[in-house]
Amino acid sequence: MDVVQWITIGVAVAVSVLVVTVAHWLLTHQLGRVWSLAGPLVARCRGSAYAAAAVIGINVSLPARGELADRSLFPLIQHGMSILLIGALTWLALTVAYAVTDTVLVKLAERNADDDRRSRRLQTQVRLLRRVTASIIGFLAVAAILFTFPAVQGLGAGLLASAGLLSVVAGVAAQSTLGNVFAGLQLAFSDALRINDIVVFQGEWGRVEELSLTNVTLRMWDERRLVVPVSHFTTNPFENWTKQGASITGWVMLQVDWSVPIDKVREEVGAFVTEHPLWDGRRWSLQATDILDGGVVQLRAVATTADSDARWDLACDLREHLIGFINANYPEALPRGRTEFIVAGEDEYATAFPQSAFRRGRPSGGEAGSAGGAGSPGGAGSPGPDGSVGVAGSRGAESGSSKADGSEDNGSRGDGDGDGDGSGSGDGE
Image 1 (tube, rainbow, N blue to C red):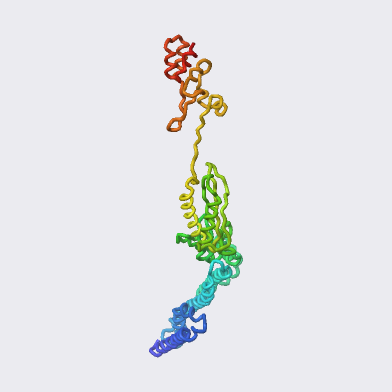
Image 2 (cartoon, rainbow, N blue to C red):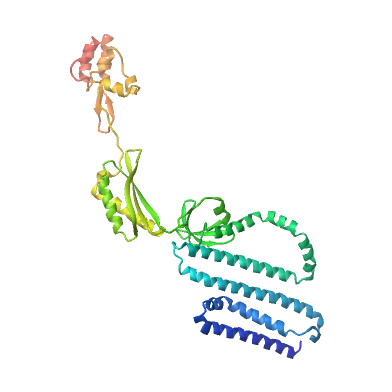
């Protein structure tokens, strides 16, 4: 190309860029005050608009085939500029689509409270439709670029003829991907899951941060991000705390002793909850819900809140307050374990514990009398300092059996080890 042709191309590009610059100034300084779409268009389309203007200017001013000195380069230049034009216009179309949806999302975000279900539903659907639109535009752009090649144009007729077979093969090969895509559409338009919904996933609390065609991104309570396939939410049950509204009930479980004054604790719960700023004024209660093994009573305090964040804070505050209240005013009501010792005569002990080792180990007949010479009437001693029950009179029984064998000193041994009433010697005789 000669100098004049290069100058022509430069002037065309400059004019195209100047037009975009004027449009940018008008959108920023004039239309931005009265048109809500002006701001998103400027923010999204600045780079793509200038690129498209430059490519369009070059294509408009490109010399004809006969004006080129080397005509063999003309097909290559024309093909390359066609690809650039398709790419630039695709980029511009994508940014315009995102700018339009940004306008809608900004308006919805102003009402994006947990209890505004309609706003969150529309926000989810708009985001999903934007991704679908971007995917379609990108697919068409790639197809248009491919069909600029002569070899692909010849292949196109064969592809269209076998479209049925190819669709079956593609469906089988991408079954999981297509399943996630349709699951994403199902979630968005069935109103089962929305942006900023609070859900419980595998026992953990999280908020829906992003919903795409393939994945759901959950922002967990500790600011972790959990990416879950969309199909999981269409094939498995899950908890949605904001499906119908943001209000929720919080609870606190306490395990206390039977001696707890439930009416006093109920009065304290009412006084604390009704004065707490996070209580929404609907209801509160305290009930004894169960009697657990180990001799403790289970109390449940309930209070309603406006949202899940307030529920957590109010429940923690109420739990801390009740722990301090019971510990300071009713320490005897704290949960504790109990052990009961039984001291009884022989007959009562035999009735209560017929299979005990103590019963099986007692001597019979005359020997039992020597055992009876122990410190207690039934042969069982009093509990010691460590709570164990001693078995006294064993030496008395031993002395009684010695007397039966003809020993002469068993009476003194019976007196010494018994309670001093001569029972060991008498049984021997």
